[in-house]
Structure formats: C-alpha cells, structure tokens
Image (cartoon, rainbow over all chains, first blue to last red; front, side):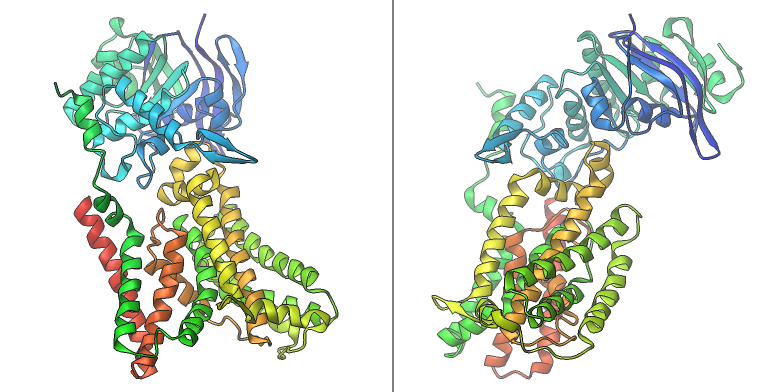
Length: 246
Length: 330
C-alpha cells in the first residue's frame, strides 16, 4: 500500500513546463526528502499535492484511491497538511487564531455562528504541549521567536490527524538548535504513521531524517532511492546534472 | 514545585491595567476624554446641551463611513470613492423621491447604487488585481460624475410625498440625540461584534495581516474583498441618505473630499494603513476627536484657518505614537 502515489504529474504555466510527468510513491510513515535546485519544480509539486494548483495532467492517489483537489481545503480534508516556507502566519493574530485559520471552531448562538475562542485556545494549547513548545495560544505571533512561529505552523498541521505533512524548507532560516527541534518533530510525526515530504536544500537535514530521497531537475524526477544507498555527493551530482539519473 | 507549564501559564496573566493600556484605542479614548474635560473647564460654552448636540450631529456622518473605511484599511486596502458614493446615493434617493417614490423604495434603490459602486471597486481590486488606490480614485471621479448626470447638476430640495419622513430621519432628534447618531451607535455595536466574533471579521484581519497566508489557508480572499468594499460603500450610502435628510437639499458637491476626513478619523482611531489593525470603536472615537478639536478651536476663538494644521498634527502624532508603542513592545 502506498500513502501517496503520483502518476505522470505534469504542470505547465503557459509555455513554461514546470513539471513533466513526475511519478512518485510515498509509504505510510515514510519521510521523503525532496531535493532540487531553485526552479527545479519542488514548490510547484508541493502546491499540486496541497491543492493550490491543479496538475495539467496526471493522477494523485491517497491510500490507493484517486483524489482531485480543487482548493487547499480539499487537500486538508483528504489528509494533506502543509508547512509553508514562510510559515504562512498572520503576525497580527494570536497563535490560536493562526492554528485555526480557515477552519475556525464555531459555536451556535441561536441562529448565529460565532467564533469559539475558548475551544480554539484550549486545543491550540494542547497541541503546543504535544510539541513541547513554550508557545502560548493567546499570544500574538508578531512577538514570537522563530522557534515559536515554527511551532505554530506545525501545530496547524496536527489539528486534524493528517496522513501526509508537506514541509517546504522548514529549516532554511532558523538556528541550529531549532533545526534539531524540527528534525525531532519530523521523527515524531513519522512514529505516528504520518508520511512527511521534506523539501530542503540542506543536505545534512535530509540525510539526518529522510528514509528516501527524491531529486527533481528542471521539472523531471531524476532519482528516488533509499537514503542508505545514496550519498550527499551523489545527490549533489543529481541536483546539478553532473549525474544524469540514479 | 514549579513546572514549565506554571511559568508559561503565569506570564499569560497580565494585570488589568496592563491589558487595558495595550489596547490601541484606549489612548485615543483617553485623549478624547481629556479634550472634553479641558474644554468643559476652559469654556462655559462647550458643555452646553446645544453645543454637545451640534458636535454629535457633525461627527456622526464621518464616523459612520469611518467604520466602513476601517474595515477596508484593516484588510490592507483603501477606498477613496466614499465621498462620491455619498453624493451618488443622495442623488439617486432624491431624484426617485421627487418622482413620487416612497422613502423605503427610494432608499432601497439608492443603497443598491452604493453597493454597485462597492462591488465594482471590489471586483476590480480582488479579481483583476488592480491597486485599491487607483481603482477607487477612478470611482471617486466616476461616481460624482454620474450624480451630476442624474441631477443635471441642479440642486434638489423637494422630495415628494415622504419628504417629512426623510427630514425627520436625517434631521430630527429623540431624547436630545440626533437620529443619525442612533444609526451610528447601532452600526458601531454591530461591527464591533462582527469583527470580533465572526469568521468574516477574523478574515478581514487575516487578509490585512498576511494576504498570502490567508489564500494558502483556503480563505476565499477575493470574494471576501468584494464584500469588504461593498460594506464600505454601504456605510457611504447610509450616510448619503441621512445627510440628505439633515440638509434638506442635495447638490453635487455633497461629500466632496469627505474621504480625507474619513481616512483621518480611521487612522487616528488606530486603523493601520499597512493592514491588520483597526476597530469600529476606534473609528468612531477618531471621528469624534477630530470634531472636538474643530469645535474647540471655534469656542476658544482661534482662527478657523488653523483647523487644518491642528488636525494634520493630530494625525501625525497619532501614527507616531502608534509606531513608538509597537517598537517598544517588539
């Protein structure tokens, strides 16, 4: 059984071919490191899986059932959660409001449906506790450290027990200690049976946590192999094109 | 034993005073109260029933639109067309009433005209991706022109069978309070609740805080933006109707450059032009403060030529104060 199966995924923006016929398989509880140079199509692939774009052609299957995502909400319903590169947080809102952004807890008040702040604050607090983060649900994100922001973005993905978490460069702009925390968290997700697709430029992070590595070059998948059978040198060669395929 | 949870929980409880002073609108309210107290002590004309009534009636119109403007500004936009929407609404209303329409029917169509302006703004801004400043600058010019075409640029001062109802609504008073001020109070309370307790309100601030994040989290940002500009136009339309009743006549220069006073009120009231901040109460207090300053200059016998300087200074001081406060807490 595969958790996520992509078959012949292509995407073009006008004349620009961003992805050509990408076929990829991710098992339950597997961490896949997705690598590639700038403009290789990593972000486009992530946005297709997350429901931001629809592929020009190709099929997506989750747990061996074909799915079509018209919008990000569809992907969330299908069990796909994303941590975006810039974390996609609203600085002016509280941590809890950010965690629940787009799927707020509501309470019926006669004919009205009002935001249920107590429930949102409590649930967000529980998630931060699971993440062992010193983040407070009622604090405004503007006043938070990089690690706390990361926790908010990751807590958001845990809101509905997800099947797949996509992480776009989660370790790009944080301190060494925070990188270790994020990698720990990825392992914790994996232990829960959640599949993680980790998009990263940082070789040590990918080799430290990924079970398998996939490499994109100019929109094509040139490799998908077990981390144990590869090496940073080989992956670098695949990314730059010094090695054709593996 | 003190656990980590205790420490995290403890620092969450600020003192009551701390919490109140961290609300931006607190300082604006404080300034307004201070101004009122000072004027009451300095002059024996400010705290008279007649003057208070005048202040209320004068600031109400700007305040109603400032609530709509605050929502637009909080979402990261701007609407320059509100003054022209006022005159277009007033003109549609008065032309129809002169033609013998009942007030409710004419007011309904007039508000539809206002909503159409807002929808036009919103669609071009949200779906065509055009800058709000440019689009609403265009409708600022276009809507006033339409009002001129509609009235042939003539003053209208007869409103058909429902004239007395219109004049009562815009110009009358109950319990010593002008009727438009009741409308303002209702709108303020409703919007304060909506901004705080509904998804729509939450998304206004989400879009203003980080539009990209709002899109990525599946919020229908484009549709929401259209509704935001339609709401601003609705407040302008409401004002157009009430002003018609107050003045008892409509000319095509009604609401001219009103957008500037409205934006000033919203900004003094704590709306952040970069988006993400603003409150309905702040907008009303901001408008009130401008009117109190204007009124006090007259009462204190200072030349009215100085008005602009005082209000301009206040805008700059309010924004500078806000920046200073944010830098300290960041």
